[in-house]
Image (cartoon, rainbow, N blue to C red; front, side, top):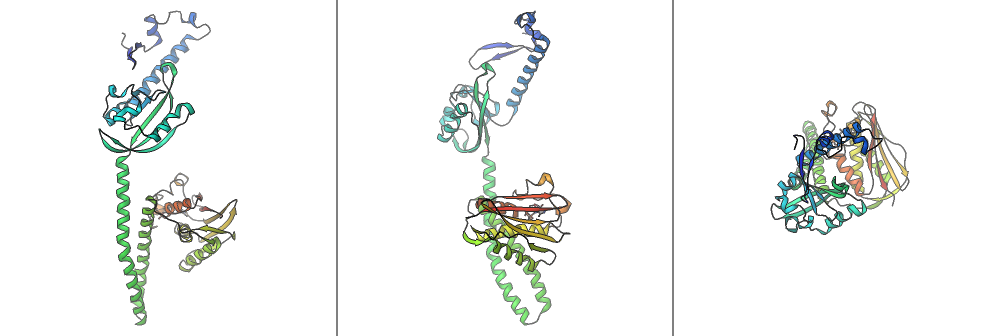
Length: 403
Ligand code: ADP
């Protein structure tokens, strides 16, 4: 064999030599010297070049598949393993002998014989479907209980150009456990903080009455500062409790009928009472009644208005409106402040996300308000989104279905 040729042994034990170049194949008399005589009208040099490119592309993709740390297998139309990559053998503690030509359902002592997985896999080739991020918890004799994300799609085998299924596995057990621990921690801490806060607030009210009665102005002033900070702490704890509930599917809705404009008016009034720096105006009014959780929707509007104030340090005007939009009512909160950079716009609804940079410095926040608001609106089968231009301002919209 010349130094560029490679011996290929297939799973069905067929062996042949793969040649690095057409030239080499000619030397070995696999292709006649006079190529043009076998394929009239075709430029042989171009053909040579294409074959070389094809070979390099194949080598390249083989190298990627074998280096990638994600386990991958290729299944034939009967869902038997044709081939697997190194990561597959390493992670599932299997050998090629235990894997190749076996049905996927037989691997790891039949651990993959899962009815839902069967349904998904068995329609990929006949119906040309794919599946993405199918999460499965599985007990594997060799490595124990794992949580896996599976992705599968149709592919073509180089040999005979037959159809096959590419199945990729991602072990997310550690990530899931960490998330659960984090959520448990948030839940416990927020619950433990809530109880003492409630009693501090009650004593602060008694103290305030006492200080007013004894005309202690300095004491009353200090106490009002303490109460402001206590209010912030209460808001933070309540955000953590909400995140915990969302993560655990425990955010329940207590729906009733109400007019959306009444909720908007009362929110604007509350904010205008405590905020002297901004002018909040109600523009269009839809006069629509909805069936929703009043407190939760108020929480969404509170978040949007308080953000509009926080992120408009120089511009004073904020406009809140509601309009009918097909079968929904659409509520908008518009400010003329900092705006949001284009590249960050899609991330602001993520948990703990804050736009980074000088502008956010000194503006308090945890990056939870929009995440919570988004989930609340989604639970009402509505949508929350933003239109924004950096330096010019933002308009946050959310829709709620009309009952
Ligand atoms: P927080 O305000 O506590 O940081 P949010 O989840 O409410 O968290 O908002 C996430 C991020 O989105 C903010 O940190 C800010 O960068 C950006 N943002 C939200 N509302 C506005 C707004 N009205 N104008 C400009 N940026 C905003």
